[in-house]
Length: 363
Ligand code: SAH
Image (cartoon, rainbow, N blue to C red):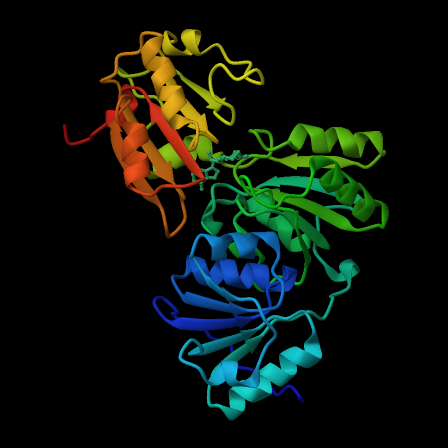
């Protein structure tokens, strides 16, 4: 189809039904941006990258795992059609079908802009680790966004602010790790970063939060260094602090807390793989900020109480912080695990235990 001159416009898609055809790297940014904008997204594609499959598993989007059919664009789920299959001929066919059906359609640009024309601060053949913040595209840093815009390839996963990839002409490689689900082993991710840089690309490793907070950023720096690849680190806003903040919880507050301790709860107290001293944490007098502690929260709160933490200590869990699906549950250390389960909360979630979790500016 010959492309005619377009008319730039910003559509309000909140509550509207949008059909995305395609679920590969070129669809990821668009699906995430539509989700961020509150659209009701249906995806049609035989295969999906991990982050889109994860959104479908959590019912954030609907995914029909099959090939595109011309009838898709005439259905009720297609007030707007987004053609993002990564195959420009197929995208053009979808656009033509949508036009014939009287539906609006956008086609992703996959023209492969010449790297030399980019205003990239990053040199070719290097890797930049970018902390993307907790999920809202507004919470990535200016430097981080510059690096993403200037990249040839972005290696990312589901906790990153994937909406920032919308409308960017970059190759997206999704290497998500989903709790108890499909994942790409870290060695494979390291290998991808090194290989892409060795091929002369500007590589961005985009993660949620800060790459050095339970983000394996150090391992990726080591892998690049071992291969002689220059690495730059752009810090991000960690969900450990931003998650509580977005729920109105200050991690320190004069009179309530003189410190906070961020720990991983990916293994429960008493597990042979755990290196944390939970008795010391119970007595630390700092707030505890627990990451990766959804399934283990009952065991962790029980251990803290057994080690002498007052069961009435305030606690709060913030799930999907900075995303349209953000949920906050409050209670105390004795009740928070049950309240979280009752609320149907799943990962990703952050639990804060300490007086700050009961912070109420009106009190
Ligand atoms: N590097 C990330 C943390 C990665 S570990 C950072 O600095 O934020 C993954 C854990 O981070 C999740 O299990 C969850 O505890 C937390 N997390 C990440 N994003 C989150 C979000 N948007 N809302 C709530 N918790 C989040």
